[in-house]
Length: 594
Image (tube, rainbow, N blue to C red):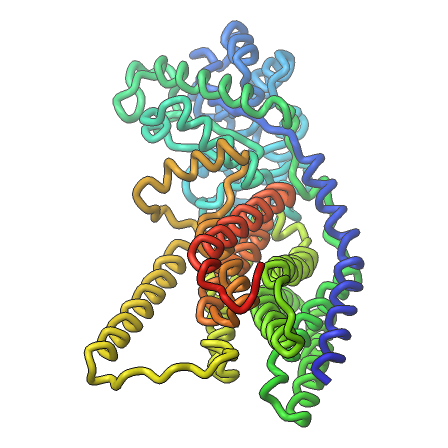
């Protein structure tokens, strides 16, 4: 039954992967089309004291690379700012003059300028639309009307053909994007003191990273806290003139770095480029996740009775059907929660099944070579098993990313939940399975020599050594878990190493993959294939596969970036692991020639 279950699981996985390809192709095309970036500067840098556009300043910023101006009502004279949702004529004239100079306009709206009743709210956004403004950004750390009155605001924005600027740290921004049908564009900015403290190279690198890897399409240079751009001294003790010059130099550097792959101006929300596929189109990813569970169960069949094996197959099938039905027919928000649970299960099962399959396959191949008296082929079997484990994990990646290919995730409004569990789950499951199967040392071709009594010196050394190794592994796992997510915790010289890898590969592979997980997985595969040892390494080695899965659950990152990052790490880490094995263990391998 074990062999049949594996065959069925692999057939279902292959069919599901093929069925998911159209979903991924649509997303790939949308991300390829989403290649427009804007650079926004404060209107106070361009408007004169009378609220009129300084044409010379507008031309200077346009020639310097700026594409967008944030038109702030507070930059206008006090007697022409408009009240109760009415857009002042001075504001309209400034917007028209900026557009005539080839600059786009974003309405930078302060909370006190937002009307409280819906008719005036509609009037304000209708006025913005008539003035040729299609984007609004709210000042402050909280969206007006948060948390109870965001729906009218979202409907007013989308109803008048506008979209908002999504700032994740702004309270209510994610819900506003949801209420406006995800008509939002992601922005990245640093406050004035922080940006002033960064040199041009540091700032350009930070902004470039956001554009290439995090879906940022609007780079914003914020005014001072007062909103004034012509004060003699700005925030942080930096003069406004020096700050403006600094911003201009950053824009020039960014246009040089991004010029080959991006166009400047005209950025649009991702929701205008891609539609959320229907649930029926995403049944195949759910079926693929069910096949992963079947493969995982078949790897445990070795120490289960036939009755329990049948029970596992029935349970996996029933759970897949029930979860699919719950997801298809449950109302929101329960359908979304069910979808998240299915995706998390798939993310956990893929690396777990991959590692257990690798161990079982290599054990079976090793035993077969022993019985046949063959020599050689050990390293080739290890490399093939390593590639197979990567393929199984990649299938899980296809299922999870296809299942979550809707606008709410791609627009960075909904996030994949359970990143910590994505690491802890596979490690715990693999450890438990190895304990149940007695697979820590592997089946040896020779009887294991008896150890000296624990009271002897040698026994005490072994106990201390084993305890030290366990503590080191536990500390490593804790450190890696702390670093998951958006953690700034780095080791000494790791920043320099990351920059070196970025310079080499363009997109830096993750440290958990190329330096820890994948080398350990390849070394463990070689030990299992050639010496039938090394199973003790597998739980920690799973970290690389878990990190691969985690990379793709950052759904706002382009697929091309995630693919390059993951497969660079897999290739680089595999070569490191193979090198480590050849240097440390090959000379002591006597039963086989490799």
